[in-house]
Image (cartoon, rainbow, N blue to C red; front, side, top):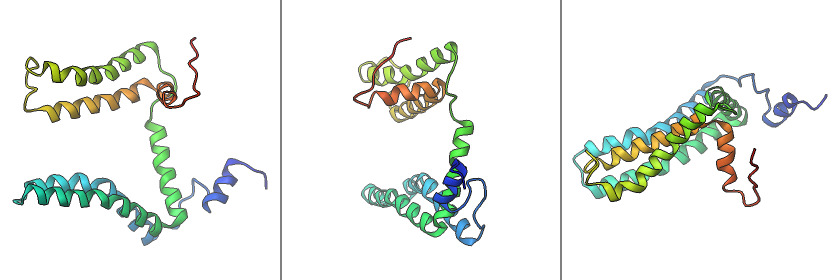
Length: 180
């Protein structure tokens, strides 16, 4: 049989990437555990804050809740099996590639993305010095920080795939900049 990406994927995972594994209770239980590992802490930690318990106890329980996702991910992979986990990751990566950033973007989109990228960094740098003159900043620091983080993430998708490569090159010692 010739060595094609399809045969290599079949050899590695035990099934072709586009064919689902046997859909039994193990696969669905694994998907449920995987979903719980992603969204469980986001739902449980804010719920703890509404309870009438001490801050120290909330912090302890929150720490335990933040360890749980790793355990659930390992359990999900074990329950689904190799073929089920490979199929689930293929679906997830296919979704991300479909809606992910394009490799090349135009000059206007790139300029807009750079502004979105630089704005939260600049604001985060200046905010401690200018907190007195920024309207509504004091008392809402976390809201401003979350908005800045969101803007930074959005900017990475607006900037496109080539920017991701440039960003990655910052962390590679032997990377060289090639100017057009």
